[in-house]
Length: 469
Image 1 (cartoon, rainbow, N blue to C red):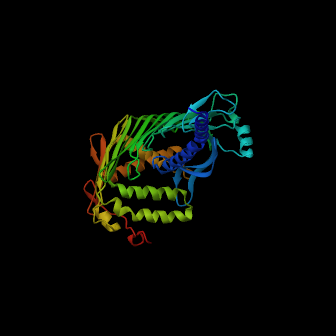
Image 2: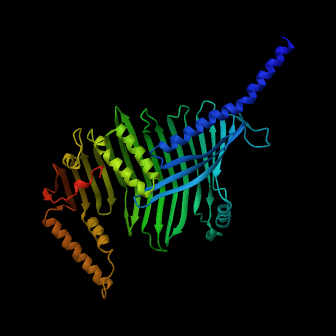
Image 3: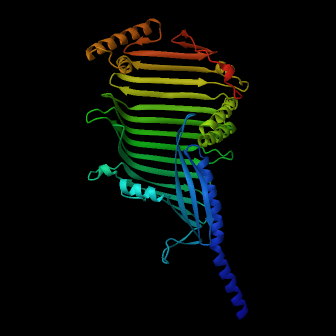
């Protein structure tokens, strides 16, 4: 081989090696944009991500994103929380993990180091109140085959007033997420060891909150799969002796599946023990399902809901109207909702309930037709003493009247409970059987009955309920 050919091959090889980081940087940018879209599209993840900046370089790129977490949305005030992340994106195929370190390399499309973007003022406040400014770190890797792995670490935070104690307002977090190469399967797990803080005179603490997902994307851009949350304990207290609420052993999961053009949900909630108002309950089990939802209608609904979450209060009403207009499509295949099991163990016996409801149809369009299409049955069984405890709590929320003693109020409440139960037994709202009260409710053909007795329905002004009004 001639010297000229050797030199040519060396030059070509040098060009290929030199251009490889820029090429993988281009692929990393596409994958980064796809990741942002996917995490924003998944309905079971209450988050939206916007790319604010992206500057692609030769061996590295820089990006800035705004992450919005949704807690609750109302017409009056969207309850959203946003923060900004900075991303140091280091290109492959041979990634230098740290500057000035030529020993540690990784074979990947890109490695991404992400952290909270903080102003100087924010850093000063955090340093004063928490003693640290590095609250959250995300380390991601885009593998050669296109799969993505994300590791999340959050530090434990101790408020200034907790200095010298073993209390931590936030005990940190850690998690791992994996998105496969064709971006159709997302798995993840987050662990929150707990929190411990006081707000408005009430103390809150929780231990070992675990959140897991396993989702698969469909051609309709739905993400059926399984979402699970476990909470070891959750407590609130007000004062050294008053414990309004204590929950242990909480497990909740939702499974979504697709078949043909249908989208179905099923879920369960289990709680080992509930301590409330000086009484212990549990275990509690709640199992439900929702079937026969049109998949295309659900895609449209989720899209509108996502846009509504980000809209201003004045704009949200338009999205509500659009979502209302989707109701006939959602009800086209007669969705079926069931509570297959509702059971809470109490010292006096078990609270039990079941619900089954079908509504809609292909020719159901107007609100009156929707009401007429509903066929629903419900049964609730309540131990007598537990029912009295519930009434006792409800009636005791009223403050003392002038010149009324606590003893007078107790006597008045007991008399009111007795009068209420006697009245409900006489008009058949309650059925007495052994040590329980039973309520059987039915709705069909626009008529509502309780224990076989017809009940008046409230009048609804349907004329203003349409999507265009």
